Image (tube, rainbow, N blue to C red; front, top):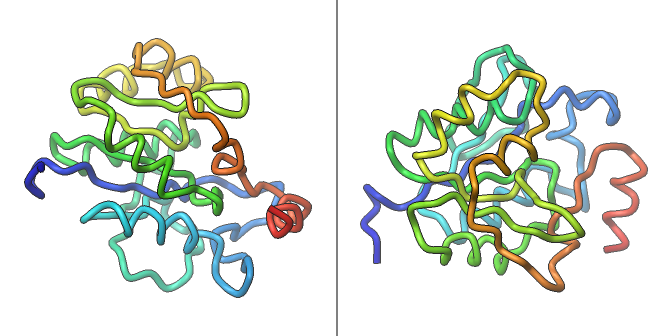
Length: 188
């Protein structure tokens, strides 16, 4: 077993602008709890250290984990991943978007079980899933130097990560981006 000095850090990415939701997405309630509480609970159950990474001014509910403030620019999920890796000081980071309430312990366990030394990115729902993945510290330089407007999935492909083909876990990658998505997640 890895000691806590080398254990991966969990990072909930909460720095998006939430335009389609109408703002303050992380505080929107789902079944009586803030949206961000769902993935946070899952990561906390499996990782000794979890943080929320957000932009300055991001409206968040009361949290009992540290909030790491990422730079205001660029506005890209890659910025949150880069910031989490920097803050992890040489440890790998398991990231999960704060708007993924159906993330399962099984998926996070698969990420944690993947051999170290490479980033591990699930392939589910017909595509790579870079917003619920484990990033190795060696990925930091490539993530930092990627073109600002490059799609995250393209940047991640260039990392040559270990791709985890997950069967039957598509629902874990459902993102809540709009009020309609919020209604749909209640049926899942």
